[in-house]
Structures are given as C-alpha cells and as structure tokens.
Length: 302
Image 1 (cartoon, rainbow, N blue to C red):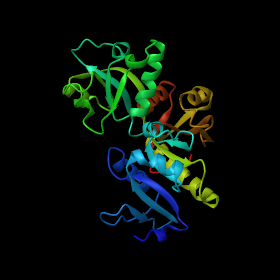
Image 2 (tube, rainbow, N blue to C red; image 1 turned 180 degrees about the vertical axis):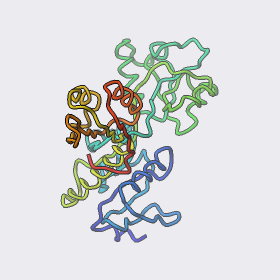
Image 3 (cartoon, helix red, strand yellow; image 1 turned 30 degrees about the horizontal axis):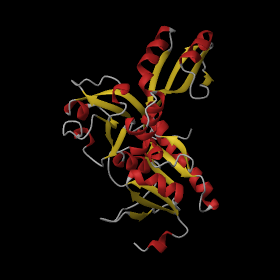
Image 4 (cartoon, helix red, strand yellow; image 1 turned 60 degrees about the vertical axis):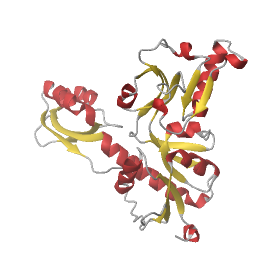
C-alpha cells in the first residue's frame, strides 16, 4: 500500500500478533470498524471511517503513539512502562482482557525464597527497564552498591529457561495461568505489576481535528467492553420493598423504575455485573421480586 494513502486518516495501531491480537480484532469488529487486511501487509484502510489500521508488535505501539504520528493504539499497560511512554501517552481505557502479572520468579526447590534473597544476584528478563527500576529500589533499601547490585540481563524469549540453563538465579516474566512457570520448575516470589490491554492515545496529537473521531472510537470501544462486562436485569417488585431492590441493583448510575398497572407494583431495569447476576437474582427472590429476567448485551454506550 502506498503510504501516501494514509494522509487525512486517523492512524490506529493494533497488535499484529501475540496474546492480544485476536481479542483486539474482536474489539474492532464490535466497534463497527470495518476493514479488510491484505495478505502479508501491515497497513490497511478502514472502509467506513477515515481511519488507517497499522499492525505493529504490541511492545512498539507505545513508542509510535508517544513519539510518532499514530493517534490511537491497543497495547498492554506493561509495555507502556517498559517503553517509558507513560508521560507521552494517555491510557483512555483498560479493556478487561490480556490480564496477567509481571512477577519475580525463582527455582521452586532452590534456596531463594524472597526477593531480598535475589538482591545482588543475576536476573534475566525481557522487561529490562521495569525490572531494573524494581531491583534498583530493592538494592537501595538494602544498601547494595557497585558490584554488589543486582545484575539485570535482557533476553528476548525463553526467559523461563534461564535458571535451568545456568544463565540466571531468578527471572522477571509475565504470568497468565502459571502453567509455563510451573513446567519450568519456577515459583513466583513477588509481583512487580498487574497488567492488561489498554486503549491509548497520544498526548501530542498530530491532527487536533481528529479529536471528534478519537472520542467516537473511544466511546464505541467503551461500549463493547461494557457489553461484555454487564447484563441487564429486569424484574417487577412491590413499591414497599423498592429501596431494598435498589440496593441490590443500583445500576451503573441508577436503575430505571416504571409504574405498573397493578397498584403498588413497579418494573425495575438495571445494568449489573455479569459475574454477579446469579447472586443478584437470588437476593431479588428473597424480597419477593417477580418475573426476574437477565438480558445479554450485544453493544451499548456508557
């Protein structure tokens, strides 16, 4: 694709592969951002908006948004910190997927039980900046200086093998399920940070006239995220117990309450967290609510 075709379009960076890729594509689809990505090309034009999608490694996206002309990006909170871009980009919204922990790990049956035991030893990681800051603070607290300080070495892949192969005494790596960590004979001894996928925008937009489009995209993505997180709970209840009902289903802002033809009864509708809906229905039954229904959301605006 001729890059001149990007002129006049908002540039939106998306992970080209990895653990965030598929979910990000689903998010774009839910936000009605329609595109057809040509085979083996990392740039494509959105068909229903003046947007160009740029497919990049997730770790590079904060730098392109913070220092380049890219206006929006989908990436991980962890790589923003690793790229030192937290002052150049704004996290518009956390997206609720790609959740994992950046953890300090050591051999399960070794002598290292705490991060203090690792201070001054060898650490291998692909998060050199974040791990360096973490252990610098630990070294300062323990008054380690010069050659006594913890040694941080960067490895781009197979970090979990570093201890078994004699390269490190401990590692700092992302942990999602913990299966890989346990298979490598490691255990977590500290958590450096919690991370998930985020929508980011530049603090210095290249085109201020893109602001309405940026806000529209952010609003749509927020709606998709909320639709995955919430359901609508609808029920009928006697007005005498309405205060208790509102406590059970307060909604995101407030429930919708409508009078019914039967005197003393009202219909209530509220957004509730999907993970809590079974307990909420049980609590509504206890106050004699009737006709309790749960509706899934395909999309919404919040």
